[in-house]
Structure formats: structure tokens, C-alpha cells
Image 1 (cartoon, rainbow, N blue to C red):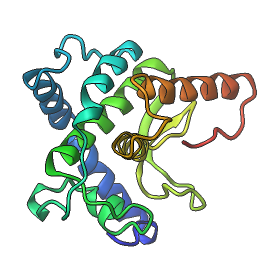
Image 2 (image 1 turned 90 degrees about the horizontal axis):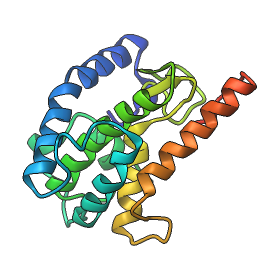
Image 3 (image 1 turned 45 degrees about the vertical axis):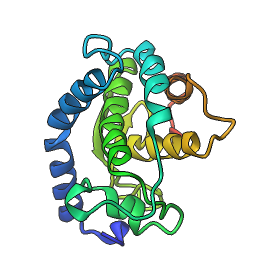
Length: 192
């Protein structure tokens, strides 16, 4: 999917449906795996804003780069267009890192939905947006959780000063503030 922005509306919708069909299974597996590997319990991973802090504190030190991209069989459906074929981000990630990001993107998206009213998953239909034809959150905000979590992961791997134990909560707070502004003055919501 090198040219995601060239997909027909029908193909973008089909990709979205496959992306969403796997959401519950990926989320359940992610929450189980986090708990099994010493992270917060499934009960603690309750989609609250507070759950993002212990999750990120536990997860970000585990994220790593590697020499080669994972085998095709180990790549989620988004990997090639988001990583392999992206000239801005052709950074090979370990199989485990990819798995963590996959679950984290859904977890973060669902946390946003539970913390900001009138937010839902959809296909980005704005032809001028970087995320055109990709699964995004829309409504009172506009965000692309997969992209957000890849950026957070790469910042953590690079030991960027912007990374902290509260990084995911900070991204959520940006979206909450954006939603407040949007509700006060309806118009264009900025995309992050």
C-alpha cells in the first residue's frame, strides 16, 4: 500500500473495516500480554486517562529498533504503508515493538473515545490531510492514533527529551484541550 492516498473510497473503506475487525482481538491480546509480561494488569488497563502513565512507564523501555523489518507474516496490516514504504520513517522495528505499537494504537484510540465525548473511528476523507484514507478518530477531535503511537515509540527509542513517563497522557491532554476549544468555537479541529 505504497500510495495509500490513491486508494479508491471503496478500498479505503474495506481497509478500515479490516482494521476495525481486528481491534477487539488485538486489544484483548495486548492487555493480556502486558499483564503476562509484568506490566499493568488487565483491570488497571481500563481505558482511563490515568492508565496511560503506568502503561507507558512499563512499555517504552521495551521498544527497540533492529537491522531488518519483521517477516511479512509478523507485520500488522498497517506496517508497510506506515513504516516500510514511508520515506520519513523507514526504520525497522523489532517484531515485539511492532506488536506493542499495534496494541497500543488501539488502546490509545479507545482511551481517547472514552475520555472525549462524541469521538469515533472513521476513515479520513480530507484529501488534504496527511492521514487521508487511513483509520482516524473524528468528531470533537481529529487524530490518527497509530501515527501518534509510532511517533511516541520512536521518540522513546531515540531517548528524545520530549519522552517521559507521562508522554501518552500528554498527547491525550492535547486532544482534550483541542476538543474543549472545538466545543467553545466549532470549526476545524487540528489534527495530531
